[in-house]
Every structure is written in C-alpha cells, then in structure tokens.
Image (cartoon, rainbow, N blue to C red; front, side):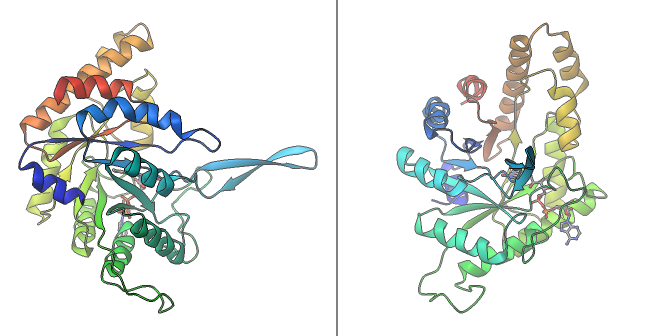
Length: 317
Ligand code: FAD
C-alpha cells in the first residue's frame, strides 16, 4: 500500500514509522532483523531503507593499500524486498540521483515494481567526502526534482527509451525530503521552500523532514509550506541524541540547531548511558507534542539501533 493510503486509512491517528540502514557488506541480515523485531510491536505501516553512497574498498598498489571509492553500499532494494515479505510491511527504498545514470535508475525502479514495492523516496544525495560540491554521475540527475519527474514518467508508462515494452505501468507513491532549518546549500529557507514546491509540483506525494530538535521549527516550516501552496502530507523525521559527540556532529553535518536546554542537559551527563537517557526523554517529549499536533506519522531515524526507538515508541504509541 502507498504511504499516502496508510495516512488516509489512519483517519487522523498518528502512525509510527522508522528508517533503517543496510548492513555493511558481508554482514548478516539477521542483525537487521534483530533491530526491526522489537519495533514491529508498534505496527509501522512502512519502513524506509536508506542508500549509502560512500563506501571504500582497499586494493594493494605498489605494496601499499590504496583507497578506491565505490559508488554505493549495496542492498537497499534487496533488503526492502526481504523485509516486505518477512514482516508483511510496506517498504520505501531511498533512490538517489548521485551515483546513478538515468538508465540505472530506470532498471532499479522496474525491479522495485516487480518486487511489489509501491513507494520510493526520491533524493539527490550528498556530495561524497572527497568532493566539495555534489556532482551528478554522467547521465544522472542534478536535483531530486528531476528524479521525481522520471519516476512520474515511469508511472505513466514512459520509459527513457522505447526499448522496453511498456505493457504495464508502475504507480509509485513518491516521497521527497524537506528541511525545517533549510538545506545546507540553500541560500535561504524561502528559496529552499520554493525548490520543495517544485518537487511537489513535479509529482511528489509526501514530504519527510530532516531531523530537528525544536518542534517550533517544524511547525513554522509546515505553516510556511502551506502558505506556499504545498498541500501534501509533511512527516516529521526525528532522532534521539545518543552520545555527547552528537552536540558537535549533528550541527556540523546537518546544519541544524540544538536547543539550549537540551545542550545543557547533555553536557551535565557523566557517561553515554546518561546521554542516551536524556536523548530518549527529549525525543519522547518531542514525539508527544507532534502527536498532539496531529502529524500523520512520527518517523524515526534509527541509525541501525532500535533500543532507543523502542523505549520512545513504548512511551508514545
Ligand atoms: P534537492 O531537493 O535536489 O535539493 C538539493 C539542494 O539544491 C537544495 O539546497 C535545494 O534548495 C537546491 N535546489 C533544488 N533544485 C534546484 C535548482 N533547480 N537549482 C538550484 N538549486 C536547486 N542521503 C543519502 O545519501 N541517502 C539516503 O538514504 C538519504 N535519505 C534521506 C532521507 C531524508 C528524509 C532526508 C531529509 C535526507 C536524506 N538524505 C539521504 C540526505 C539528502 O540526500 C541530502 O540532504 C542532499 O544533500 C539533498 O537531497 P534532496 O533530495 O533534498 O535534494
């Protein structure tokens, strides 16, 4: 079922959903199942599976180990299919512009269609660590909006070339990213919102936000998006702080602000167990307020670890 259909079916009740990261190459999928198992009690209607681009392989060159960059960590679509069938839950693969040609994207989408995957999250992807700015692959898309258009075309049976017999149509429900504190490259929140509107006008069906720790930023973002004519569901994405280092890493990586009250609480902690407790309590408070405000889903960034999310879900759902 589509994410938007799940939201409609819930009839105003806030749903619980989360995203997972494919395990590193060579790891067993059981580790992933062990993290998903405890969260199934809270009946997620869908689970997102991210795509990671930065992965290194080391090869020996002149007696030294030379780092070569591969394009992406594999597994997203396969894991979506495995989870869908094991748990009978809808899955949402994250599809990136970066690292893919348009043709490769088309093959990936056709595979998703055959596997019965009905939702995709259309994203540009970040610049890789060795790049200053995002660079599309040759023959790939520059912006998520162009990827949305390709998926929409496929939904209408329009393939890139006439080589494939288009006797079926996919009907993907398309999610896109939104940034309550603006995307790090955007010159202003208003210009970023205009770009978000372009994605919705191109065919995006719903929006999932970047993480935030201050709900007022999310509420303001939703208000401004509505004023701009964006009328698709906006799903808040949140995550509990788990280690002290997050105080520096999260603002640095995502260009988001942390509330003073949260910073003070974390700084007082004597060890990571105390930090986790503070993070969980803050996230519960945020979640309850979002549920009270009637958001369609609270979407959690699990970062591959479910125990904190389980505590939060138990307190909220
Ligand atoms: P876009 O919507 O293309 O926007 C990128 C930037 O370009 C913005 O600053 C925008 O304002 C600007 N822009 C857009 N269109 C134009 C235009 N026509 N001209 C000029 N500027 C323009 N990354 C991963 O690698 N894997 C994942 O699985 C993943 N999952 C994510 C899930 C969520 C919910 C979110 C919020 C982010 C996720 N990301 C993921 C990170 C995302 O890929 C990065 O934030 C990326 O830098 C931007 O992606 P986007 O889809 O928002 O890009």
